[in-house]
Image (tube, rainbow, N blue to C red; front, side, top):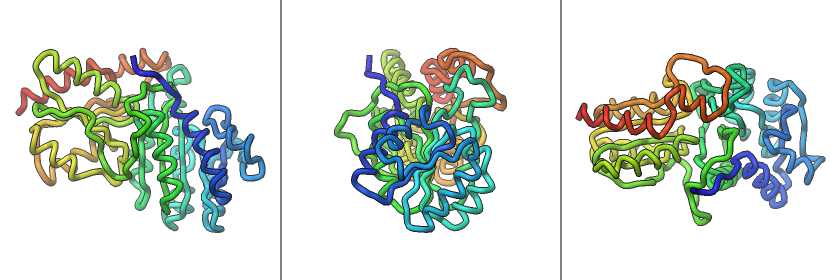
Length: 312
């Protein structure tokens, strides 16, 4: 079994590394530094850490002000609160002005588990993706998280990185290098393509391995940059495999599947299936139970591949 590592911890430790190298890096949090792991930075650089309390709107506006003053602010809380609780402040103070603010949220999707629907962020990618100029990243493991945070710190403009609560299996080796805006081919295949993000990447790899045992050759793409999306990789997959399945821990509307469907429809229409949360809010339960109940497992991806191949 692959080693499971916390994306949140990788984020917190990477912030410390960046802070040592660049004194302009500052970090903000909204009373959740123990959960978002920004506490590592707070411990190392107390004068460059700002706990804004349970006031996410204020945190976003303060981050915008720091960016306008030449700092590189990383602002963190749970994904349900940013962008959910302060969409207007993000829109007007960051997106409209195209300020160099890095929003890194944790506890994305229903894998938050027992905290229930009030803390399940299932709309955040749709919300933040609607804002012009924002780059949106959803890492698949801790190695990709650390790599992405470093690239984001060195790249000007507003960014949103979505992390999850549970530890995830490592899908990359230490020599992996994140390439902004590019998909990563995790498995080659010619019968169908599964395009996944975040927590669903390891499930997609498991599904592909199971399908191969039944004679189905399935390509797997990790799409860590959701916006701007790698259109060339999508078009290539559509033209070479003739069928696409998307997999995401997010509502079906407005997330990965919606974005990819637009690219496919414009450039190379092929049959598609969508593994995502349907039009509902999830109940409270353990993460594994919820992923199973709402159809976000390797088995669900396998079934979607079988369905989409029948449509070719």
